[in-house]
Image (cartoon, rainbow, N blue to C red; front, side, top):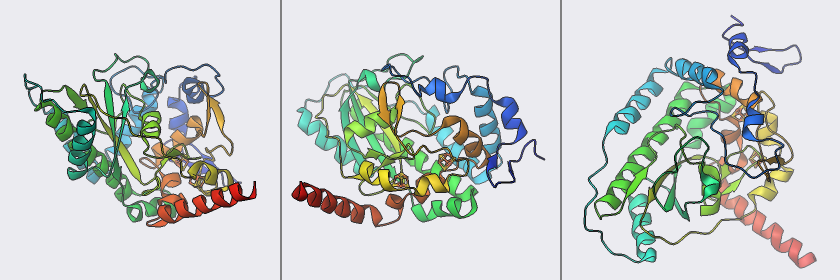
Length: 337
Ligand code: SF4
Ligand code: SF4
């Protein structure tokens, strides 16, 4: 049984199943991610990538195979698959003229009216590109956020794993795919090239740095975004377009500072994958999660997410209060200095 199921060591720490250890390649995921690397460089595809070769493909295949056992999640996955096969609308020959400010406003309105909860806009930058992929078309990147229902994720924290929660995550990606598809078609019907994310799999874009620049949140100690309304209880999608827009601003509201003194995600993470200090990763010092420790547990539990669900910012109604608390703390500090 230890071949497929994990075990706890005598001291209570997590031990990955033997199969995981057999499937793991000799090269560390942290090395591929650039942990300790002071050079600025593009991210290397490592996990959740279907279109290019990845060193951890056997471990990823095992995760996918195990996911088939969750039948409701499989249904969500099939819906995403059907959407992926749908062609985009024809690109209308005559392009509608709008100012960048008008495109930003109307596209944001459309996205919010069609399922998105957050919208940010940035010019497409080299910084967001992932190695091995061709440069995608589109000069402007619209980053979309989709709220998750934290109470549906809480059982992961309570039980260490929960199939219904994993299904909920996929259903949010399903919504993200529908919204991105609709928004891309909306641009195309007005004569502007656009394409968008179509499912949870990663691709040519590294969305977290783009979402940070676009103002969707700050990076948390658990390696995920923290938003001022939804905490970490949201997922991302995107649309790329040639229509010129106005960039939104990064949002700094104190989450990074809060993380310095908080230990919740570190204590809750079963494989102890969360560093307590920022790490150098591809030339940037930032919060980082130990990939090699996280992934076995992530696979064992159909996607884990304990750190996201347990984060105090994710509790319903809590993020807005913490934003006020951090603003007061900053004001007090500046009055004392
Ligand atoms: S649980 Fe605490 S330390 Fe971890 S990301 Fe959330 S606020 Fe930061
Ligand atoms: S997803 Fe799970 S295993 Fe990975 S860092 Fe978060 S709590 Fe730890």
